[in-house]
Image (cartoon, rainbow, N blue to C red):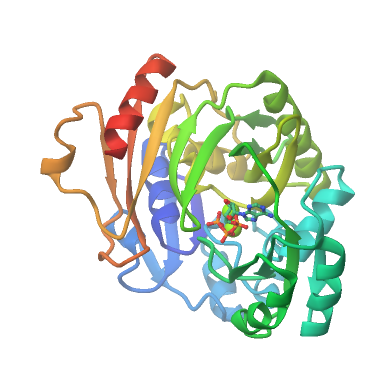
Length: 353
Ligand code: ATP
Ligand code: MG
Ligand code: MG
């Protein structure tokens, strides 16, 4: 059996391991004792900031991949069996590199500026204006490391809020909705795209994903963008790009060099899940079909709903990551796939209640 190692052992590693189990791939996770993927896969205790420890782990597997882009550059540097490659990860882990890269490849973004001081911020606000968002370049997720600026006179408090870390200032996009495109590129260049999925956030955290977001023009444009990005990066694996939909176009928000929360619905909704296609891609196997049915996924934030609360939905798939309950934490998700979109909209309303 081929052996795929994952740097990280959270819920994404857990679902990669479950996909591996189905297709005869041994998935081994590198993380800390008690990480949730330990429930389904062998876990090797590895300090992911330690170059030699990661190299030793890499040497025990055929292909090494990751569930988080936040692996330090010196650790990434000499890993010869890493997919996606270190260059792609370095771009995706830094909002400034990421935005520069998107623009360079013809993908529109919000206006942005590099911010390293309060003075930079004050100057940038003269150009970009308010409303805008100050975001740390690295390590932000679920809206952390961001502060919204509604008036230009809030510069000092915003700068204090991010603690002086290198940042970018982004103009606020007036969007109709948010979508993401999940794509896979295999080691031999084969491409696969999922249908666009519509994402709804609350308090900076993804709450609901509904697939497909049916719009032929936007689907075509998103696929064109992903194709350019994947080729420019010589990328292998699943890549996700989040977009804002405006009245006539797409503006890229960020990209993730990995399987993504907005793709969890593919486990039940697609012929081949994002997790299986990621493993296939990094192993150089032919990609599986992304044919999909209308599906809705709800994130469980803080705690899982009780079985009592979900029993009214016999078609519902519960994914409990086995993590301790904690405010603001993603502890699981619920999915319902249907034959037609109307049913999904109805289920979505009832589930939201
Ligand atoms: P994730 O958990 O998706 O990785 P994150 O912490 O990296 O989130 P972003 O995706 O950059 O943060 O922003 C979180 C949310 O904030 C976006 O999904 C969007 O709703 C809103 N947002 C971020 N940037 C902008 C912008 N420039 N204009 C309008 N809304 C924005
Ligand atoms: Mg992000
Ligand atoms: Mg995001």
